Image (cartoon, rainbow, N blue to C red; front, side):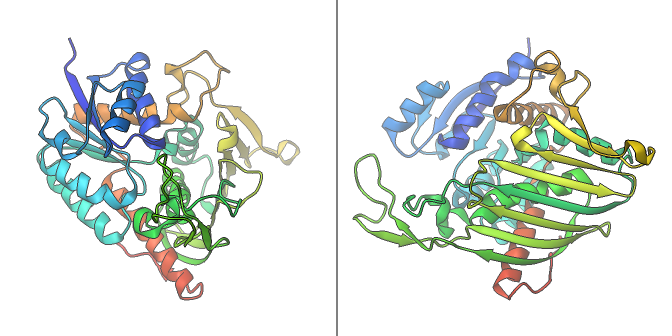
Length: 390
């Protein structure tokens, strides 16, 4: 009999649903050291949280996340809330001896992320583990891309191009949701989706961004106030409110190995729904990935004769590809939700092994420092800004 490990989750909206799907599925497809139990979900509204618990598969509903820390049947706290609450919840949970999985970006500020990383380091000395949820690392094709780089198949890395393109707020009548408010989200496209391409680029190349030069823009500066299910706006009445985050961020950077990199994160790329793209060029070859074709990795081997040069498609569904062997027969592709299953699987295995999961809170702090450098550079007129080192 495997030991049971209880999970308590805070938040039940978009990320809460994806994490719930992962906890429900992971034990059915991977041989795990623990049997995960979905003990309780926490939210502010008793009625809405109870409905979410029933729909998403949680045994209990709590209206105060602190109750999760008091429960003996909860060993993991999974944080799926907006960024303004990450630090408070994570630090308290780690102090209470709970392992913590926290959505990205790690926090809204560098100071909050530093406090979280320090708490994680102290907790790790007591055997309490923590991980930040950069799920795109767990796309099989992205993990295979990292393997190619580690094996030296690209040679010296010279260029990285990373984009994250969405179009979900192009309509100026789209309401002023929390993701468009700096006090709740920290930043806009930069932190929400730019954080992903920063982490993905560093993950694949094994290098760090050391400096950036940036521009940001907010295209729609006022939006209708969001209306709740009760018919009330966030501001208590009709009207509009200011958008206090960026709609798009564009920046160039240099990696620690000397490579040049460019990054683009936008919610205004009409026609693109979730296009996380990355291309890496090296002295011996190149690779290219687009999440809108997530089961494919394109690879160019520059060591072969020029008559055969060009990118070839690798369908990343074979049993020896990262994560893919646990699922379907070759050629039967995976989807977005599977990345979260892989995330929970890796987290549980690290807890059982007594090792620090990756990406760590320290990794999340590093991304936070890049985000801060981008904001500083954009505020100062694209001046090249060094990324603060830990």
